[in-house]
Amino acid sequence: MATPIHFYSEGHKLSGDLYLPADLKPGEQRAGIVLCHGYTGVKDLYLPDNARVLNEAGYVVLTFDYKGWGTSEGSRSRLAPYSRVADVQAAMTYLGLQDCVDEDQLGIYGTSYGGATVTWVGAVDPRVKCIVSCVGVAHGARWMRSVRRPDEWVDLHALAKADREKRVLDGQSEWGERSMILLPDRQSAELAAAARANNPNAINTLPMEYIDETLQFNPEWVVDKISPRPILFITSDDDRLVPPEESYSLYEKAGEPKKLVTLTGVGHYEVYVEPAFSQVMDETVAWFQHYLPAKP
Image 1 (cartoon, rainbow, N blue to C red):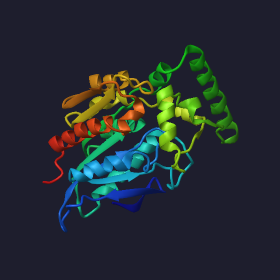
Image 2 (cartoon, helix red, strand yellow):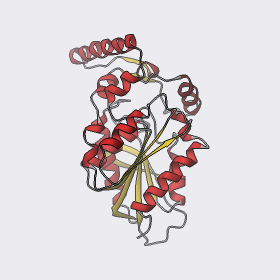
Image 3 (spheres, one colour):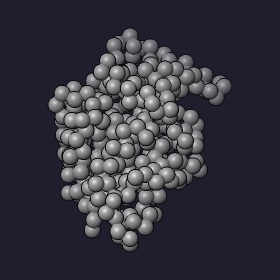
Image 4 (cartoon, one colour):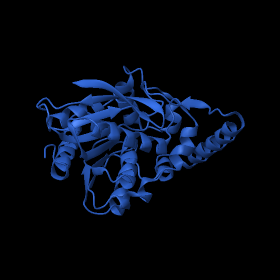
C-alpha cells in the first residue's frame, strides 16, 4: 500500500509514494529502489505494478512525479532531462533518509525515457548500486530520427527552430499534441491511449521545447562511467516506438557487469501488461536480488 510523501528538488516540492514490504519488521532496514517513469508518464501510470512486485521481493520502493508533472511543483510538463536527473538524485536522498532503508543499498529502475534518465543518474551518482533500464533511449536525436520519414524529420527541426526563437523573444513555448513529438506507431497509440484514458495527470499536450530537450540528451555518452556497478537493459525485438537498437547501443558501450535481455514479439507498451510484464519483472527482480539483496 502506498503512503503519499513529498520531498524537494532544486527548491520545488515533488509528490511521491512510498511502498513498504508487508513483512517489514520494526527497526529492520532493507534495500531501497527508486522507480522512474517515462517521457510523458506519471507515477500512478504503470509504476504501482512495478512497486508491488518489488515489495513482494522485499524492497522498499519510492515512486514520484518529476517537476511540473502530476501534483509536483515546477514548470508544467517539460521534459528537462538534466532536471529529471536532479529529481532522481533527490528521490534517492529522501529514500535513504527513511529509517527502514539502508542508504548504502539504493537501486534505480527506469522505463522508456526513464531508462535514459536512470542511465545518466547511474553514471554521475556513485550512490546508485544497481540499475535497470527498460526499453530506454540511448541517443535522443538518433531515436527521434529513427521513427520518422525524412520529410517528418525536416518538419520537426523546423518546429524546434521556430519555437526556440519564440522562447528567446517572449519566454513562452508553443504547445502541441503529444503525438507530434512522441510519434507513435499504431500499436503504441492504441495501448497508450487506453492506459492514459482514466488518469487526469496523463496529459496529451506538450510544450514544443520538448524537441530540443530530447535531441540534446544522449545517455550513451556516459553509460561507460557506471562500471563496475551493474546495469541491466531490457528491450524487445518488436518495439516500434523506441527501437531495440537504442538498448543495444547502451549495452555495447556499458562496462561490466551488464546484461541485455531482448523480449520476443513485444511492443513498447506491452511491457506493462501480461505476459510481458512478468518477463520484465522476473528479470528485474533477479538482477536486483543478485547485486542488491533486499535484506542484509
